[in-house]
Image 1 (cartoon, rainbow, N blue to C red):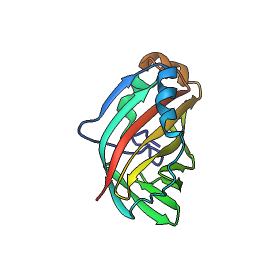
Image 2: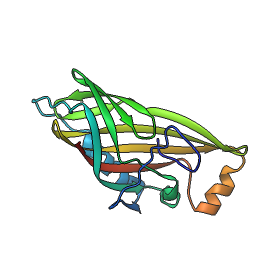
Image 3: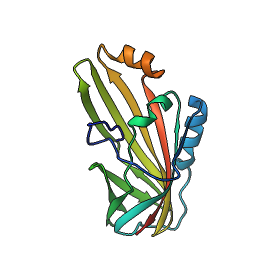
Image 4: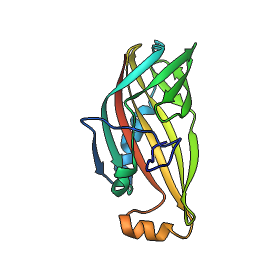
Length: 177
């Protein structure tokens, strides 16, 4: 998923110019995330194999916004397509298995946990879905749910003014390279 500072795997790695972020209500975030849950078109669009670059990123959160400095997204991802299925390999090393239906795609949830300290374990689940405009252009969202286990979580909540569990919506556009 997306948490850095020595943490690996699900911690996506995104450093992009033009990246914006903000805290919104949980209801607003859920409404924004639901835009990719609609009806697909009748025409099936398949993404091009190879490298893809993020062309824009907007990060929204319900109560995680003060942890935005932990997010690192890379410059893009690789796609390996097999019929109407494809693997999205993120720069951070995580692979999401995805299925195309019409112009929409949905990927299996990628989960990870990181013991950053003895008193804190951060758990992430990342759900990716989106829409294809052509074989070379897409938009989507990496929905990252972050939870914390351990005695140090209460201190982290106070110090960073967050409430666990919380959610990031990493809304993006991407183009094939």
